[in-house]
Length: 127
Image 1 (tube, rainbow, N blue to C red):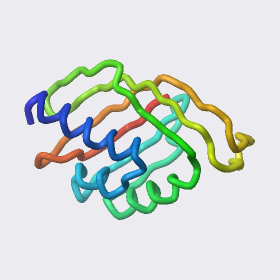
Image 2: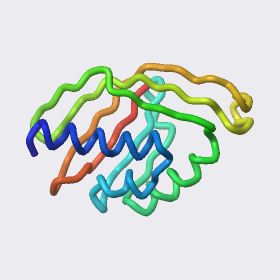
Image 3: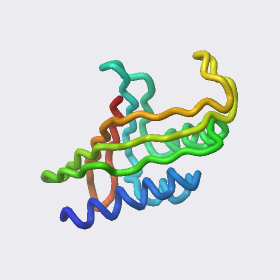
Image 4: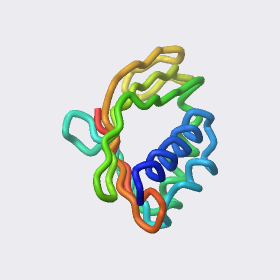
């Protein structure tokens, strides 16, 4: 995969994410995609396969009134891209961890994407 192809795939995935378009997100993914959310070095969520990702992504929609991931940096290597992300969201519901509905969430982090067969094979969201 070339750098322009990888960047386009990631931008399409993020567009789907930002628009709450799960089908758009899934169209970028390999059937065996692995997703991990890592916070303070701990894996807080992991899905294996497109169906598991779809279930989690569909459920997550109800957590947010608004959400946006924006690329701040992009570094490409062979079948891998390290992407600096700026994240903004507004919670739609009260969360079990104490975040209240209407809370603005802003953070910066990193997402690591790997690729296989012209699709996203894994995503690690690190904050």
